[in-house]
Length: 135
Image (cartoon, rainbow, N blue to C red; front, side):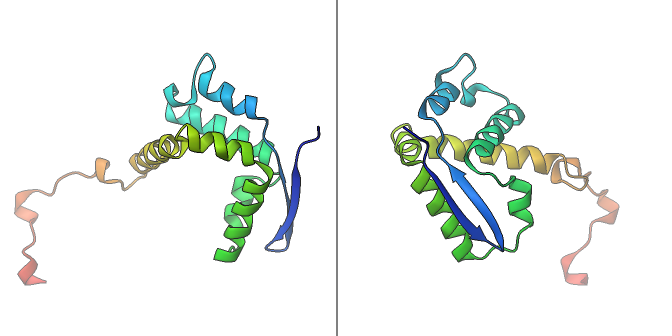
């Protein structure tokens, strides 16, 4: 049996979606080092590799495109249409919840590395405290 594929045009670029092998997803969850037990950076790397198997357009290229809500809907639909078994498995295993935790952790890790992140801020000395009534 051949893999499902679908090509759509978004922002003037043809993007092809390809079916992900279900055993690839299961291996990520039940292998020697399950996705949920990896450090965030390693887990994101694994997910990036999986995304590269499913979409022939790098994520950075997608993020650089001028996308509208209709484009996002078409991207989601193409991914769902070519990967129904993956989404069924994801629903059954509550991967949405696991991915939400991973996304929150990765956003937190990213924000902590920003030059002006709250975790790097130093408290103002008391003598510099501003009274909001003076502004």
